[in-house]
Image (cartoon, rainbow, N blue to C red; front, side, top):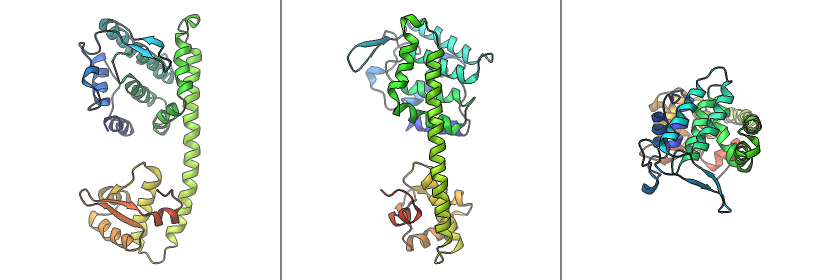
Length: 281
């Protein structure tokens, strides 16, 4: 998944802020790589040539993207300049740039995905990465509130005053932080419980307990259903050979099972998940 790879890049700070409109096009190409219908490909120098309408579920046109392409490039250039203005607080710059990007709507398709990634990228300047990475989920769960910020900004009588829309986005960010804190508190409680359970497994060697502890943490704090032997070894701070040895011990105890040979992937068994207080299924 190309978008997932971009978000992972945020965690190791390998991504750079766009310095020119062509950089936005490059990010877009990565976001939609392999997922865009040929008829939706940009047909201009960088962006789209002709207009595009944003249609609501009621089939009503709620917004028309900026035209022509020269205006798209001009507005995105101004957006980039604004994001570099240190007289504006970084979090406000990130939110305003998001509004500008979605208003311009420079592509035929994929504007939402690209805009949300750019928002996350710019927010890394002022917010913790866990908050930034949890924001997409919060937006997905509060779409009505998210879209309302755009409606408020574009309301004729509002004259593009951004205060209320920014407050709306800040509330979504706060919700993301609240969700994150609640989630971490829950997982911390589970972590204490599984540590106690693992230490009480007298039938396992200390090395096998260490590997089980690593596999349990990866299960708890990541979204992957299985982990490679390389990742298990790295997390447990042991060699691959040693990891394979202890994985066999855990397999015999019915706590860790091999899911794939090439690549070599392992996952906790349902027995292990139940005993450790993790979700099953």
